Length: 303
Image (cartoon, rainbow, N blue to C red; front, side, top):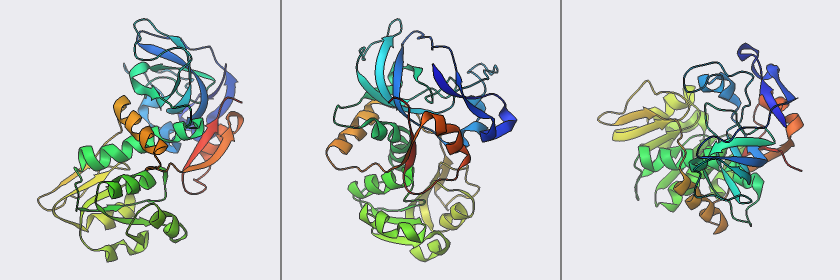
């Protein structure tokens, strides 16, 4: 099968290439998915799990990418809950070969059924962004109706979903980002928008949901009122709100939540921003690029 592979850890995106790789093996409780569309995170080539298995052993050359949408073509021993021929979407495992390939082996519990009326590009754009937004807002920040939340990078893949979920939950949503994205973000439900440089003008908030890190995180942290919560998916915060909490987390697979999120997409309650769509042959080049605009860049694998 064709796949994008990374051979040398120190080479970064320049070390990626399109190559022939062996067809994957379906272990116990796995499925093999014929990948139709895949998503990736540009920083994942720096993650230790990209290069080693769960026991810490080197597994290069490695196939990156952790979001996928496709069709089940094979079941591993003991696999339940999914069937051959079923459309699915979800997360590939962090410490195994990923989704930038024509076929990939995935733990069945990491996948959810994809309805026939949801495009594979949307299915591939939803898992990390949707689960990160939900877990950050509700599992970790414990956001509730009437609270005020500041969402950084609100036009990005994660931030745009966080804005919509927080608004639907009855929170007051303040968004930050680039000035060019103001109308887009307000259209997603944010009540106010500030350029990242001017975020101090936003006033006090109960929750900061940060996807940027660095100076943006530092400026946003100053706005959390005593007893509030600062959540970042970009870096561990080095400040903590008075009498409050500050935390960093990594998204976890959740089949039930994926099913809930895709129902929201079908009902028109959640808009998934899909940015550029590129063929598998251009995936290596996409890692080296900075994000071109709002939404998630998706790699179209199957014709």
